[in-house]
Structure formats: structure tokens, C-alpha cells
Length: 373
Ligand SMILES: *Cc1c(COP(=O)(O)O)cnc(C)c1O
Image (tube, rainbow, N blue to C red; front, side, top):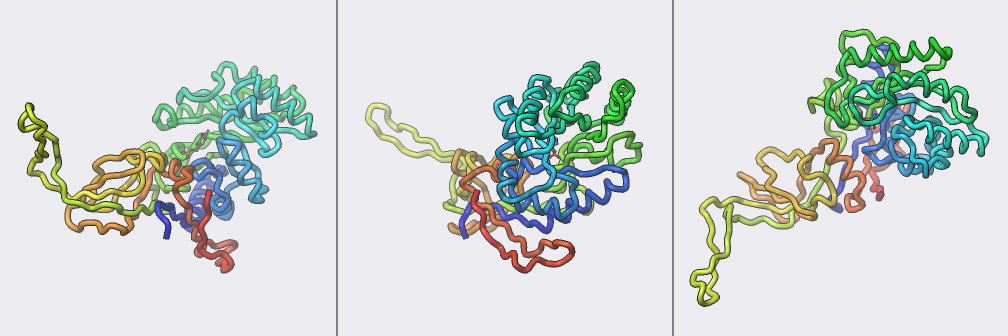
């Protein structure tokens, strides 16, 4: 089979989704499935839907359009504030978007009015990640402008944590989000239907012992796809961490010294020789590189150590069993490596849906098939 390829086990994605949906349901929290690391791959989106997410979200309109083209009709939100140059496409393809700029909201409203729609707006508030968000003291004012604007409807508020700063959300920040929801409603009425309390990094908080306050939604990508807590990288109990496997091919295996330098023996004439040290290692080349994934985000099998990467090669050292040229190696990926591999045209995506259960029945019409991006 062709390499490099990424093999996707939809059954595991569906399992992870339904586990998280069920655990959070008992806390009064719905799950929005975030498809951006999968580039809006329709099969992966459908596995999330089969697992019970309330809707989908992506950061890029191209990914949303890909899902729409594939016939996905569920509620989709844009979780990155839309570009002014893409307001038409945003309104046409997503029911809601996360916003922080009045100029963008006004253009979304105009685009929605032109097509006879109402676009839903969720206002993002800055609570310490220092990426996107309206400052908390300005939120009520922006909210009151949005509710007065024809073409858009204020649907809720949300916050993002641990993306830029890497700091996990704390109970105080979550309590603040509840306070802000109450504040807005105090001044303009019951308009805050959704209070979206962050991403996978909010799971330790949401599954902990604290009170949820008014938080009733989380936007989950990494926890569903990779089964880990993004802040610590630790696996979440009961979830699969191997829904994705990167398969690469070995193209060279040689025993080489650690160092090899070209020295001139006699500078007067061009008498050169190669000098090496005595640290001989078995090194192999894998036909994959920076163009295809984030090399530092790959998890190698036991006994294999990463030595370095360039645009088209990864070099590894092996201790016991030399890797045969033409053989394949199976790797796990972290979120960044996954995201880049999913978006790389040089990495074939292989979906094997033979284990997906739709309504508890194995769908026998789905055979393993290869889907090119
Ligand atoms: C990417 C993203 C998410 C999902 O993050 P995960 O860590 O993959 O769960 C949620 N919200 C926003 C705004 C995002 O950009």
C-alpha cells in the first residue's frame, strides 16, 4: 500500500466522542466536535456525529465547505473569528461564528440580510489565554450592539484557554464566565443560551468536582481525536489514543559512524580522506519529512530513536533489529503532527470504517477505502 499514509479508525473516534459526550451530559454540558485537525474530513466529522456531538466546529471556512460539499447538514460553527473577506462564505455555510470584532459582526449581519438569513454570534471573551477575545469590561457593550443589529442573533458567549499560553483554565476563570453571562442578561435580557467553556484543556475542570455554573458547552478536538489532555499530554481514561496511525516507509538502512568529516591530509595537494569516530550506529531513513508532518511530534516504536529530520527525510537509529529497506514503520502522532499530516497532500488518508457502528449496527457497505485529500 502507498506510503506515507495516515490510517484512521473511525470506530475509535466514535467511541471517544460518545464517552466524552456521555460524561459531560451528566454535568449539563454539550459537546461541539472540532474538526480542524482533521481538515474537516467528512468521514471523521460523521464519526463525531455518530458519537453524539451537538454540532461541529472548525476554524477554516474551506474545511466547513468541504463538509457541506460532502452532504453534512448539521449545525456548524466557525470557531475562529471570520475574515472580513469571507463573511459571505461564512454566512452561507455556517449557522454561527465566534466573534470579537464589531466590524466583522456588522459585515456578517449585512451578508446574512442579503441572503435572507440570520447568523448566530457567539462573543469570545479574553480570560487570560491572550489570544482572541473581547476584554471582559467591554463585553456587555458589544453584546447590546449585537442584539440591536438585524441579520445577527446573539447566541452566547465563550472563552478560550491554554492555546497560546498553555495555561489550563482555572475555576476562577470559569466562574468569571458565568458572572459575565449573568451580567449581560441583567442588562439586556435572557439572550445567553450558550456558555462555551473552552476546548479539550477544560476537561479536567469539567470532569472534576467543582460546580459548572452556567457553562453548558465545550468545543472538543484533541480529546476526541487523540484521547489526551492537551495541557499535560496524559491519556484520558477510557479513551483510545491510537485512532490515527502514520505509516512510513524505510528507504535506507546503513551502519554509520556518529561523525564523518572530510579532512585534507596534505593541504598542498588535494589529498582528502574521510575521518570517522568509533561510535557506529544503525541508521535508517524514512520517506517523510517536515513537508508532511511535525517530526518532533511523532512517537516512535520502542527501540527506535529520532535522530533528525529535513524537508523529505526522517533519520532514526535502531538498537537491535535493523529496519529492512521497503519495510513500513507505524507511528503515533501528537496534535501538531496529526494536523500537519492530515493537511499534507503527500500523505494519503486511509479510512477503514469497517468497525463503525451506526445506531449499533455495523455498516457492512463501508469497506476500507482510500480517500485522497
Ligand atoms: C482549536 C480550538 C478548539 C479545540 O481545541 P482542542 O484542544 O483540539 O480541543 C476549541 N476552540 C477554539 C476557539 C479553537 O481554536
